[in-house]
Length: 288
Image 1 (cartoon, rainbow, N blue to C red):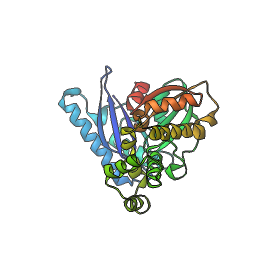
Image 2: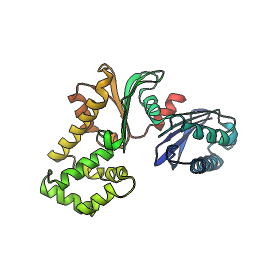
Image 3: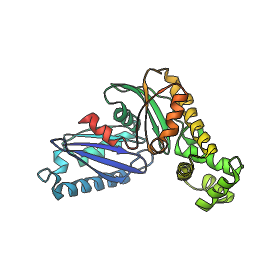
Image 4: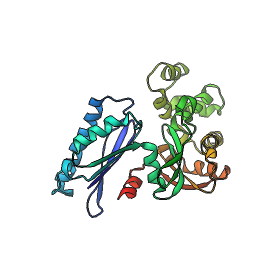
């Protein structure tokens, strides 16, 4: 058996590839070794193992003992870069002692899921944003993402920031501004409190993106979306100088705004590749 894991900071998908081609997936909280200590990481891994065991006992492959039957564990996660990835690797090895364990970044996981064994430009558009140039063997070049304050163009956090800025400065139609404040029961003071005084303002801002999806046909919202996706391409993808390669995307924002993303990609002279909401299926295809 093989275990392929896609972990963000919030949630993780653990895909079990059984002999014969059958797969199943369990969900847990996410792991980010930059943020989480070993006790927290160990708790998530332990919970995942229990969930996998339960699935197997229910009849999916009752002859297998999960901790001793995995030949490989491939873990792709947010914050999984040296030296932070070392603790994740060690704890996975303890949980699955007979497996060969590899821990890589979520960006490499996205590239393998989107590009497989070919070349391409792989992008993540979720709460945050990232991109890389991939050449079958690994990541060749990467424009630094820099986070939602300095970068992350096209991400949920930045889209949310642009939205609240336009609402509070009256840059959107009056009816739309009123509908936004009513939809989330927000005031200017409340928004400022969330952004400047509460923890994880990027998640708060990303939580406002559904309003953009609900009003994507509005001219102003459409312009905001396409304009920001074009900015993502100009500031991140143009630097790779490979317009001959398809540009593929993974993430909730990319999946939710496929029409606007396609328009932006074509406007900037690129060829659109795949758009996937979650990468774990593509990761499993790569390894299995």
